[in-house]
Length: 421
Image (cartoon, rainbow, N blue to C red; front, top):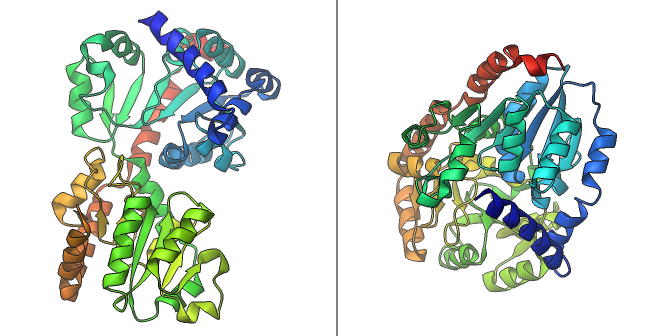
């Protein structure tokens, strides 16, 4: 199995190089790894105490960010190394001010893992959620460097727990500590002989609550909303936009609308505007004059969605008609009831909020329309849902504090081999 894994990594790299000839994302993945180890070796301060944080992409970065920033406060003498697997994380956060070094992660070959770990010599390695690179895990273990997973989630259908996954499962046993989000992950790992597991919850709660405590203000959005109720559709794809188009045509006089596509594509946005057939204004072009007559705002910039939710009375989060919903905790941090499509089963917070009546899965336009009737028929219905969301968010904060308490114990009891470096 080890040979198969190493072969698959090399094939992945080869595939990325071939795909890079026509795919921009793959091209960035390949370009970012040119002379990568040489750059790391020439940049890293070999005498520094390094804490290595690895995130697959932007979503995992936001999940691990509260821990990284608290670590920086608690251990100011440490240097922070932040690595990404995906360009969608690296390209957006390559200038992130709280990390001292930011790089792509080298491909997980045995040679790369040994060379990387020897160059960095971290005092601790923290992986966010689920990015499992088994040569890196083995190398860190061999060098007595503590390995910690933050906000991890495990499911029975993952390959570790299948008959052919024994080799992968044995590698997971090398991890020093798993901070998992819930009981199901704890039980599953325990069942397969992994006991170094603690339930702390999801660090994303801490992050979104921090954002909600000091959101960026948008006076033009306040003016746009006026006295009307506002529905914000965030991280939408084509099927989500179809639902919103139907809703807007059906109830154009009742609400104001903001649509935030998951991918900013000028051509697709123009198509969306054409289908809505009302007065749409691009967020980038919003001003004191055109906001007066705007019915719909289409956000064609990146980075505002988490803050815009403060103005919403109801949120629709996209992705649920495809592979899975996007971040519902951002609107939940403002205690807003949430709608999303049917593919939400892999997201614990979606199931939790659905069970308590703060979020609602919809399967077609008629479901969306009926649920809006239910919520807005009486103000008390909307307020009750808001209260359920607020309670849920309050009950699930504090993961970062729990993690930092345990990290202190780990760092204070470093292996002898590492302490004498």
